[in-house]
Length: 518
Image 1: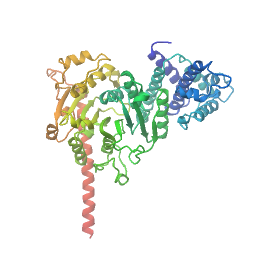
Image 2: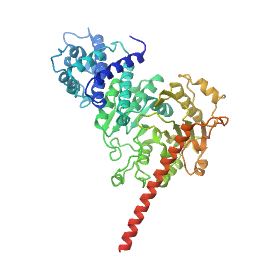
Image 3: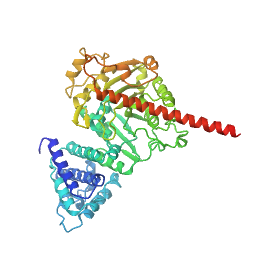
Image 4: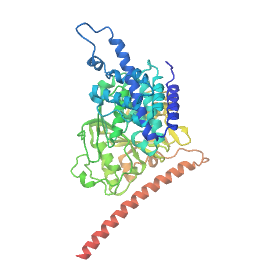
């Protein structure tokens, strides 16, 4: 087996994308069938391996059957769904229909996948399907299961980039997901993602458990929800490719509490859609997930924040992506934010630079809740980290965190919490540069622990820049990009305030006209 998984993924993607370029299909039409074939190749490799291990165990009185495979955590594949069978189909055959039939047969034999697998292969012509089958069959049969999962994730990411805005609805860049996971440390318990997309939070949580020498299926339970049915199917396939399973359902999280979430979860992770408007607030009345009520402004950011916060049990932790504007929003949103801070469960805020996402070029913020901090010496404190200058440039328009940078940021949080540091990814040099004594201390331009009194003096702002300050650069370098980003963030806040003021004026005018008419 080739040892470099990056070579395999690059080769597979280049070939698959070339096939799409020569077809009549959009990326959105092509992505799900291709991901389905990666899933099928994974299932076939696992089934073939189990078949070899079970050989010789049959007796005259007992034959090997479906339950023997399922007992090993392997999906049972009927003969028509085997990769070898599909590869032998003559080109004159309706190959698209044959693959559709194969997916249907897998669902019939494996109840957990009922209604999950794609059956849209007839939109691809026979020539393209033959080439895709050959391409996926080139994945080595002795490849490790996690490597196949990484191929699936790689394709998810590439398709998300190709699909632009829609891609951002189902995919969160892996380095952002991994940072959230490292910050809240889901060692054991129930995990909820109420805007789960393709399930990246669950996959990275499982990897976190594995890196700490435990078995994910024994340590974590997965619960997800997403508004889009096709995205739920992508998530379930992603879990299956990684040998995971969970309770993932389709539903609109604003109105549907499908997992009876209040106070039930050890961990909540999410990347919700930002600045959504036109949520029907009347349908939210008496919903216990919104204890502070909906904000008056037509913006759902603080609905999501309350969903995440209310789902945590008394020791639960949450980590999620949020629009920068939420950190400084005024009016009714400020009142909700004040109550959250005064509740002593907000633990940390991390500012992330621009161009980490495919749909949002502006910087974003990571919020961390820890409902168990009320009994610690962090009760009256919040950690602010400015990570906007920490990144690796992928190309002109995209950035990511390296594994070492992720570990460094997570180690800042561990120092703040008094937890043991981790140096599996080589962050020891960065830690030594900033924290020579391996003890937390505020670092100008990087991190600051603020008291609740300081946050109150700042008008309950959660913008890390207000607390962390700017490192001395000798007065020489003026970073135009950073200044522009700062101005755009300020404009976003002012626009939100203007909209709220406009709504108030409109309401007051209407009331005045009614009273005048009386």
